[in-house]
Image (cartoon, rainbow, N blue to C red; front, top):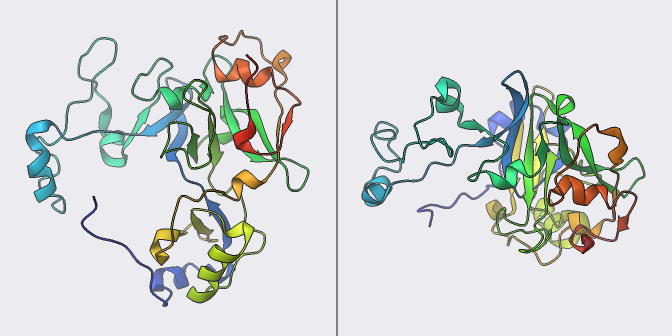
Length: 282
């Protein structure tokens, strides 16, 4: 429904050149929703992008003022409520300015986010590379190890599930640290070469490329920027085998039987040909 389309040109922007994109690290852009781990209530917490939707009376006005920052905060959005007390939450200036909200354990609005963190054990379910080349790994990672990092939440109920994870009956969600999947054989920085890479090789079956520059700048290119289709029937992420590494005896707490932590711990040591092949025992 967007009134405009963003397309890439053949020229590299001045910002990308200043950031030295030619010496940047190209990584896979994973299709999910952005998350952030930072301190809240004295411990590491997962934070989600704030989801605030226009109220019914403001639908038409919101579209008319889509480009107007001046009218952005004049009654277009529903108040943010505490799910337990139904009272307005004082979320402070950080969320207003940066758009993040802490994910509580029993959050209904952010239930898929909360399914990948356990605050009692202070761990998160993370998808990353295994030590063995060409192998992915799903394992619990201490939240303290990913403190002040951004990650992507992927899974059954995120962005129409482009990676085919889980099912409606048994949803599966995972966190992927940004920059986790470095592209081994990237294309040159020519538009024709990039298009050929996206269309002609297995490693190019990704949503996009994010170049991580030495100065911290991130340069992003989506397939849509080149007029290419996404999602794909088969993705590079789903072409790699994955192993579950989850030793439950390391944690001094009982995981709820229906939680992802309990279910993945039951699969400890299991290997699957693809992410979409992961099935929990009945």
